[in-house]
Structures are given as structure tokens and as C-alpha cells.
Length: 396
Ligand SMILES: *[C@@H]1O[C@H](CO)[C@@H](O)[C@H](O)[C@H]1NC(C)=O
Ligand SMILES: *[C@@H]1O[C@H](CO)[C@@H](O)[C@H](O)[C@H]1NC(C)=O
Ligand SMILES: *[C@@H]1O[C@H](CO)[C@@H](O)[C@H](O)[C@H]1NC(C)=O
Image 1 (cartoon, protein in one colour):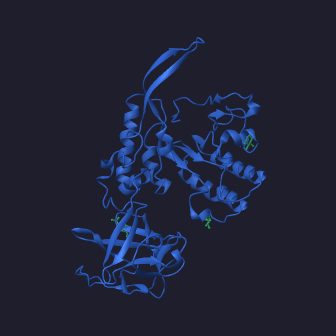
Image 2 (image 1 turned 45 degrees about the vertical axis):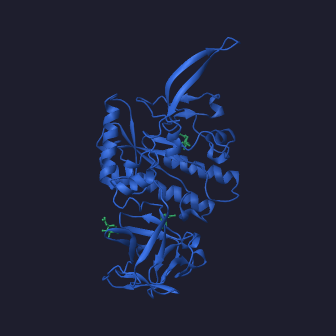
Image 3 (image 1 turned 90 degrees about the vertical axis):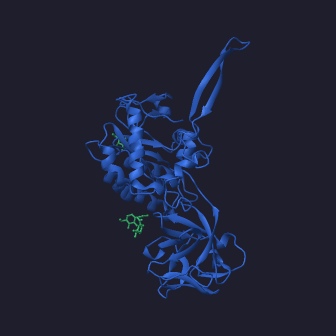
């Protein structure tokens, strides 16, 4: 989300004003996008990722594993929901495992059908779990000097091995000579490699994240002492992780993004379960990072009234939006809807207001939440909040 948002930030290099026949001045713009400065993507600046340990095993990387003894690929039978076998001569979707990176060496492994690889009570390797737990946590151990040769350590401390083509078990001890005779040795093939903002934050961990935020904060303060500086919580970690750090800077804002989407835990939730989640779980998450002394201020910088509920009625959307307005209204800096205009109606705040799905309180001086009011009842004016003392960021 944020890269696409920042991707639209343009730097005006120069502009000439032309006089048209009708006598109006129109600008002719020469500009460049700020990609490479504000957009963190590996293809723009690969060196950003250089200092991450195991930076070829970032979150989202897709790997295939070929057993050296069986000369066959690991496969999630039926694409998931069943056992892991070692009987495929060719590798494609069912033979591809997606890394969910916990740290440089520890991962969850997702299969084609989105289930997670785990070890059952008989020590067999299966892909049946839909949410990760301790039995779905694996360590990748690489051969020194040959990164493509790996062993996979299961939560029980033992290594996975392919003793036959019809099963994989977690029962091989520590010793290996890394030879082609060791059934716990696999050769990896990387089929997809992601290098975005998430991978950067997840890969570097807290220490590097705080250093980058401090540099950015100081850069802003060299130009102004009154602007609010909005700092993102790392998507990959608990939002409270940076609370003390961000709170140590004057006029700093901790930015969190709340969606009832993008995670399998929302699949199949009913209207009421979604609303309950906002009113209970989300409100306690927000309360955990909101200090009434405003150090730091809190900002729900992205939310939407779209969800995974299929065929919901207008009144359901209204209740869902209202629950979010009530809860996110408690954030001490405020909130921002993702996004102003979108052809997908529920993602468009303009459409949601104009069609009566979202109702904001008109008086912006009573509500610190709305930076811009598009409510037609506010006489169609776009009005800025009169609470803004400093400068709000505006990236669109
Ligand atoms: C990685 O995470 C695992 C599981 O939480 C932990 O046991 C291990 O010590 C961590 N390793 C590093 C290098 O932080
Ligand atoms: C919400 O919180 C409750 C109580 O802590 C928990 O049992 C439940 O699993 C949470 N819901 C989701 C969807 O995470
Ligand atoms: C609007 O204001 C009323 C009265 O102050 C309050 O009860 C209500 O929750 C507010 N609605 C929103 C969406 O903030």
C-alpha cells in the first residue's frame, strides 16, 4: 500500500506556463517520481538490502527443495491439506514453498493451498495447519560455502529427511557430511524473490528500524520544529515495539494500519464477528499503544470499510464503518481512510459518504478526526481541520 502511495509522489522539476488560444494559462510540467528516495524497493536500490543476514531468504521468497538421495522434489500432496512427499521429478506450484520469515534462520513454510507445513504427533511432515504455531516453525541450516544445500530442522530439534519418496519425517540427528547420501540434505531452487518495504523492515529488525526512523526524524527537524512526524509501526512486528522510542520525540506520531483483510484469520467471519473484532480486539490493540499524554500521538493511518464478507447489506457496511469510526476516533492524532477515490465503491471514502454509508460529524472542531470533510451536509465544502497546528503530511 504505502509504496504505491509514495509512488505517486512527484517532484516538480520545472514548469512552463503556456497561454492557450482561449487566453488561459496552463502549466506544462517537467517532473520525476520520488522512487528511489521515498520508495524502498530492491530493484530501484538493491544495496538497501545488503546488510540483511540471509537476504536471499526474505519474507515471501518461494523455494523448491530437491532431495539429494531421492532426486525428487518435496511436494504438498493435493497442493495442501495432506502430507508432504518427495516424489516429484518436476517442480511447479505444489512443489513450491513460500517463506514466512520470523528471523534470519527461522521460518514458517506455506504451501500452494496456503496451509502451513508442520510435524504431526507421529513425526510425519504434513501441510494441514491454517495458522502457525510452534509445530509449524522450522530452521533452515545452510551448508557453509554452498548456500543452495540446506537441511530443515523441525521444532523437535531433529532434521527432516526423505527416507522414501512417499513420506518425509522429522527424525534425523545433527550429524551430516552434506553428501548426496544424506537423506536430510536438500538442494534449493529459488523461484521468487521479493524486495519491498515489508522485506526491508522484517529483515533488518528493530535496531536498524529505529536508526532509520531517527535519521528521518532529524532530517525533518532540520527544516521545521512544528511539523508532526509520522512514524510507521513495523508491519512485521507488534505495534507496541516502537512505542517508547517514538514517544521520546516531540510531536511524533505512531502510525498503524488496521484492515479486516489480508490475513486468513478474517476468512469466514460473519458481519457481527467482524464488528466484534473491531470493538474488542482492535480497540484493545489501539489502547495498548495510546498514551493519554500524547507521547507518542497515535494515528490509524489506513483503514477501510471493505472486508471479506460476501454480499453484505448496506446496513452491515454502515455498522462496520461506524464501529471503526468509534474505535479509531480514540486515536490521539486521528485516522485516515484508505482511500479518497476508487472505482471499487467501498474503498472510496467519497462514494461511501455521498451514498450514506459513512457519516462523519460535520463540525470538524468537535471531531479531531476528519482532516477533510467531504460530507455533503457540510455544504459540499472541503474543509481542513482547525486543530492542525503543524503540517500534516500529504503524500497524494
Ligand atoms: C529466531 O527465532 C527463533 C524462534 O523464535 C529463536 O529461537 C531464535 O533464537 C531466533 N534467532 C535469532 C538469530 O534471533
Ligand atoms: C479476539 O480476541 C479474543 C480474546 O482475546 C480472541 O479469543 C480471538 O481469537 C481474537 N480474534 C481474532 C480474530 O484474532
Ligand atoms: C458524532 O458526535 C456524536 C455526539 O458528540 C457522538 O455520539 C458520535 O459517536 C460521533 N460520531 C462519530 C462517527 O464520531
